[in-house]
Amino acid sequence: GAGPLLSIVVDDASPQAAREELAGFSADERGRVLLIEQANGGPGSARNRALDALPADVGAVAYLDSDDWWGPAHLARARAALARGFDVYLANWIPVESEIDAYTHFEKLELTQHPAIAGLEATHAFAGSFFEQELTRPIGRLSTMVLDRARFGDLRFATELRTAFEDRLYRLELARRSPSIAFSTRVECFSGQGI
Image (cartoon, rainbow, N blue to C red; front, top):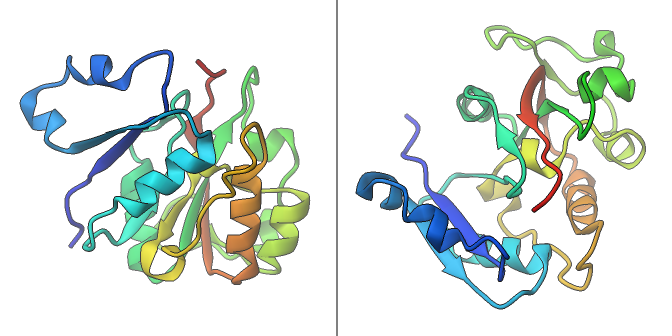
């Protein structure tokens, strides 16, 4: 079975302090959150700090930027896909200032080339070169990605890329390892516009 969820929040000297936001949570909710506060090091530094703080028994990692949010079924669907042996789960999203999903808007995929996964509605097994897909027409964002820690726990973000592309480089490094990918055409992530 799936273990409990743990949220690691890294406050990278945010103008909107995470400690203040967490103060409104119940004691039970706060008990499932590990807050790490650090001087501003950029998104790569914050994500690496969270990865380094993961307890040993954590089997999967999901990322969520501070201005994005998941639909209610995202993590359950990701867990189901990883339990079937997939290395990575990705989902469709709504881009900033868009009214249609990213897969439609950007013409990301030809679904007939990717077999449906029985028992996981609107979910497909990626077929072909994931590296090429990620390089040319990415089918996931960091906030839609859930990955198997045993396979990718050693990957880290480039801290020198403080303003952009650290997530893209991370995803390309992951793609170079030829992971098995399950992806959902359902919109499971929504994009904010930054704080």
